[in-house]
Image (cartoon, rainbow, N blue to C red; front, side):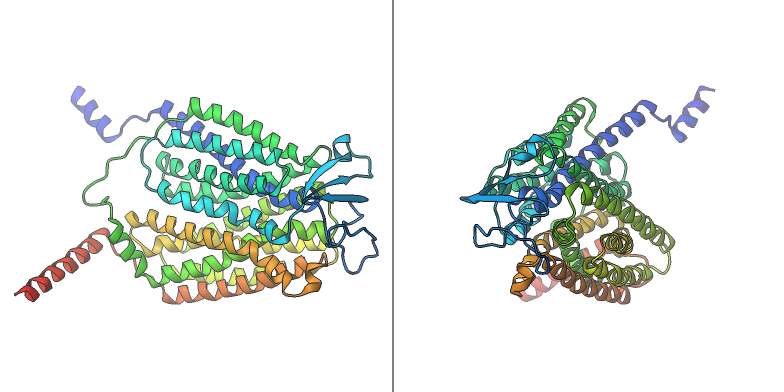
Length: 502
């Protein structure tokens, strides 16, 4: 009888309920931390136009008068009645009935190019550069996570205390370092699996950016620094929870036959010779240029063109991103699951079409004069555009065997994030400077962003369509096939060397 029980337990091992609950709690802590890191990054894009940056440009069609102090167009009287600038800093005097904190607000004077640098490259470059060694980290991940979250907390505090552009820039670079160190996707992959880690990553970004947009609304009754104080308090609580609740994930033994680790040479050769994968990276990088341009400059469109206060545009953009992005990702996930085993190229055709459709709604939303119509069109455009992320990662999985998919997805995400995050936010001011009237008109940022979206999304759509043409509906090569191909090439190289020596 005991023998039967032992055999039954070996076939059906008992589930460790305590361990399972601990894993769920740890995942909630990681998800909360990821949301906070994304929120503190994206809140800056909402706070810069109406709060942090000293001046806003006048619309060429309005009759608002202002005093030109620095040679730049004067501040819009819709927000501020007087602005004094001295050595790159200024003081805004509020004339409405807001709190005493808003009566004297220290603002920072910087150009549109410097705004683009703050919104994207300063953070993204540090994040992607440090994420590369993090991919190979296998030990002490929970401790590194706590250190990274502490670094992010320090950068949030520096941002809240910033009174110069240099402080903001250094805080953004440090924020990218902290975000790379405390990226919870690696821990989630160890707790669960790669698919859940990708889902965690996708929805964590939408939730985090939405929280950053929504939190910006508290700067209206208080100060913009309070947005970062609130995030700092939440981060402090999360750090304490991580120290007590997070456990180092168990290492899963890797089988010799089905779990071999590829060398750097083997991985690079396999990824570099896959033409659909390379073209998918090109298309996604072009698409990311437009997306990061939207993330950095869309709040400026509504603040400058439509004269929206931060407590008006922040919550609305948060709802659009959360609902539109979430529903779009779910729709893309449905398509991914439907064509998981057959008709794999259709996923690429699907996202090629949805990117073109999104242009038809995003461009009118940027150029519309009515703010409600603009928000409505933007919602549909974001929903259509955000179907791409889940399908594109599924395409990467279709192209490679299981033990190469993690490396392929990491290279894919880091490449398009680095290119799009560094180029997109800087192309908008570059397009604005191409025509002088766009730089001195509040509607100019909308025109520049519209041009960027048309070029970015249309070229990305073309690339995705070609990827579908290059893909086949066959299973990717197995680990054994790849291993045999490497061994065969090594034998041929050895034989050629021996014959040459003879």
